[in-house]
Length: 171
Image 1 (cartoon, rainbow, N blue to C red):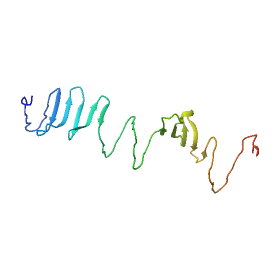
Image 2: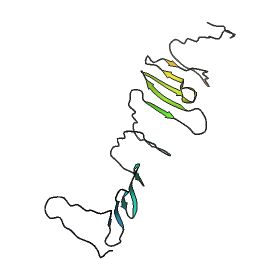
Image 3: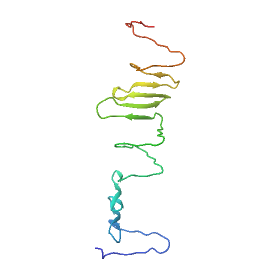
Image 4: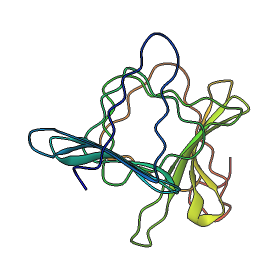
């Protein structure tokens, strides 16, 4: 009932408490909500009549874009669709990794840094290494290595044929 209300002005210092099972703050002229709070339920903040921040059992739900000076996340973050990073992305830990999982049953991969080695691993096939740079700077590419185009280099190149039935024979 709009006619059943109390106006209280806090004089001086101290606290002001408002007790209610539902609390609505609205515009005097348009009755448009700013804030709605429900006892043991959602709290909603509005902008121009639209809910922009809504509390929920999972945390908060934001409708629209957030603009922050910094963001610290402790725990798992899930991005659906795309994430755009316009500067550095730093991943820290004792064995940091980035995991790429597609949804069309093709091999999935991860980039892994562990013990001073950088590797790209096929997670669909028992984390098989597909490319490794160890802490000495040596590169290992298990399996076949196909080159389309020219290879140019400086220094020594050592090729070893380990296949016994090869025309060149083992070296």
